[in-house]
Amino acid sequence: MLRPLLLLIALQFLGEATVRLLAVPVPGPVVGLTALVALCAAWPAVFGFVEDTAEALLKHLSLLFVPAGVGVLQHLGLLAREWWPIAGVLVLSTAITLVATALTFQWLARPAGPDGSEP
Image (cartoon, rainbow, N blue to C red):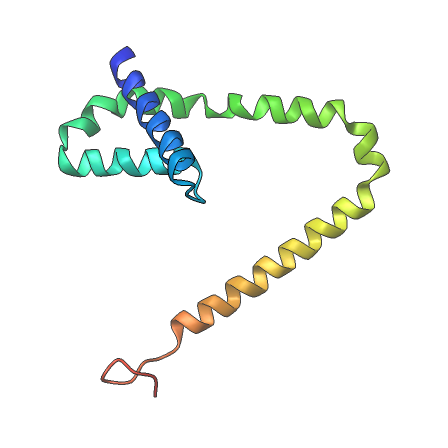
């Protein structure tokens, strides 16, 4: 389990280094995960090599939410004072996301003509 874990950490480090060196506006772990997918596509044995370790990490993924929960509990006073702006931003951002998603879906789902162009 140690070697697959080292591989996963090395790929995340590779992703972080790539993002910082090239100033790519993508999170480092996403680049590392993309490298893992490419590695698994090139050598399918890599998938079996990291599978058990990845499943073990995913089983305990909920532990990563503990620090966020503690942070919320530590700042309950601030949340109580600022609940109105927080609620407003949450409602507004949800509405904007729903509208943008619906418009994108309508744009992508529009019928195309027989030659692939719009009717």
